[in-house]
Image (cartoon, rainbow, N blue to C red; front, side):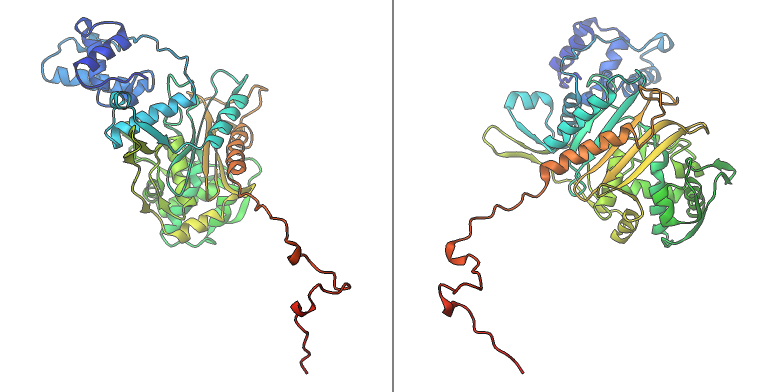
Length: 462
């Protein structure tokens, strides 16, 4: 991540950082890159998000061509930037990227101002949860196939503060917590929310037999999942895909999409509709063009954990100047996105795992039981954690032993580590009992009381 200000000095610094040149020596392609990312340098650094950096680069060149300032557009190629020092690469650097971007967007505090004035930034990150997450990801991912990726985000459902964060990379490159991924069957929860918003009852009957054709699309349940007769509530707990697809067909694809958006799933990702231009019934199982980010999945389930109250995910709690005065305090909007009774109905339809409400999910690969993506999302009323695992392309993901990766395996291992780490650090402390004073010690009734008058005389009522 390279940060630069918007003045001449900032552009010169960026030219040196990206290309090792003075600004006067930049060619058109290199200058277009800097012009494209200067608006949001923390987000659009090509080392952080190459896809968005290229999109911005193309936008600048297209505008130059449109205005007649450029005639050789087709011959230009995206420029190669200098490799950045990755010595600090870690989840902590990914958090730093998000913090700096948030300060720029919400607090009007660019990085140069932070450095020059010595502000103190207090984040929402919980040390116990973050440490548990980093240690677990490091352990789980050791020795895994090179193509395997993972990301995890924990939120405080009451405030929206990010408690733990890991983008799965090395801090320099793509942050997978911010990268759109196939939502998989975790989306079945949003189908139930859409139905309940329309007045469907939890015992609404559904056909959970498998396989089935629904709206001309084939659906099947995971191996071993049977739900016939089935109900809305039952389809939540055992992930009956055919029942969820039937329910999505009944309430309408648009209603499912709107329920997901109300809970916290972004409407657009990188300038495109998150669920594609024309989503179909496959949205019930997070299929087709249905894409979400790990941080958005955590956000949506956090809304359920907060009884339907949608918060704003954020990394910064407050900023203080060198004298301790508050320069910025996170007071972000909240909204009662769905009625609390709907959130509670969904909660008690989900599976349970060590006192938390959970929704495992997969994006299947073929019909043989393999998966291309695996999710584990779960929460109690203090913390929600979403874990994603997959690859950069649609392939069957395997672990280092060659076995199929399922939600119950590696994703759940990471999820439990975070939840357990947070719970251990925040468990209520047992009260310390002071020694009982001698005068209040229990007296053996067989022995005379030191002060018989202190004992009440029993009375018999006839």
